[in-house]
Length: 169
Length: 273
Image 1 (cartoon, rainbow over the protein chains, first blue to last red):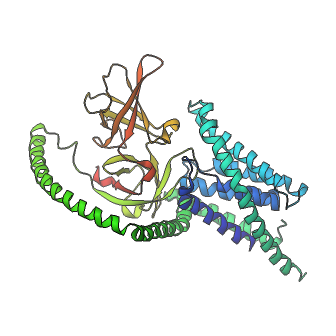
Image 2 (image 1 turned 120 degrees about the vertical axis):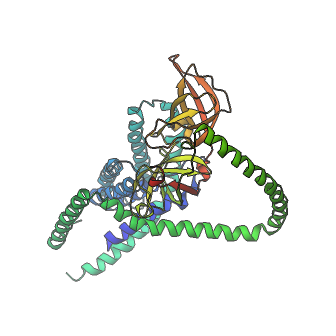
Image 3 (image 1 turned 135 degrees about the vertical axis):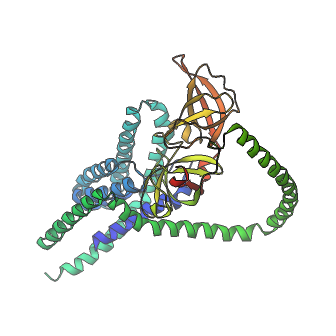
């Protein structure tokens, strides 16, 4: 139940971000929807599920648009695992921790991608931060507030269903 | 999340089965995982593109009825002019063919066989410029097939599944193409650059002694193993001296508009060999 719903959500989100959400680009910068979903579900469900969702989302990205299999999967997996660690210490109705976690994750993702560019000899950090990293982070954290609400509602629905089935025991 | 015993068992069996399938696929050179994912993603992406293009067409129709009537009138006038020019060009074509025969250059500028493909997905991130097309190995598109649009170079295929393909465009930071200036005959390396990708430009590294000027035509050179020679790439926009005094950099504006790219042409491999 949970696996299929989250899997379908990830698939649809990936398909949308490669097609329709291309029109959402502002100044050629698009927000990272995958990070928003990974952070939301990791915070709501814990590190094990966060890491799994991150790995699957990263693999989807690597298979459909990446050159080699792995890097994005590992980065997203780490993001999901670390954000899941905050699961126990926060109220779900609180919006500050999702906000901060999305900011940190987006920065972490951008820096790891930047490593690839540094290895190829492109070291214009000022350009990277000014025209890609900072706009992307701002766009992502603004939209993450909306996505977190949606993930919260979906998670509530799934948990309600699961509670129903568990009453048999 | 607690795994119970049954779930553990099925999970183990599924993983082992998946590994075996991947190994078998590796042996017969079939990309199993990417093929599976592309079979799932393809219908979703295709339907989204279809619906969005159709809906924009509908609104466009209602909005611009009167504009279209005007445009139609103008286009009819233009068409008459073009028919006249076309007959002239046909003459030129004959003349050109005759001259090519004389110069024995027919091998270099022949027409390549191609198959049309539309773009069904673009890279969601901001760093790279990779996209997916809706033609795969079923349509004779294979790895290193060359992609064109509007007669200009777009890039080459990184990998292909039976129904879709992954394309690396020339403005991507990881791409490099051996290019040649038509007027002077100098060859250089055309690289994508992250700082120029958002402007749709790329960078040509060339010998400092070559006398290039703004507006020079750039084509693919005869040195590349992937790209056939003589495909137009773009024009020189700006020239900059290198720091080491040995090279100069020219900013090339490609013929293709990468931001609004939708339809492409894939040169199928047997067209080249």
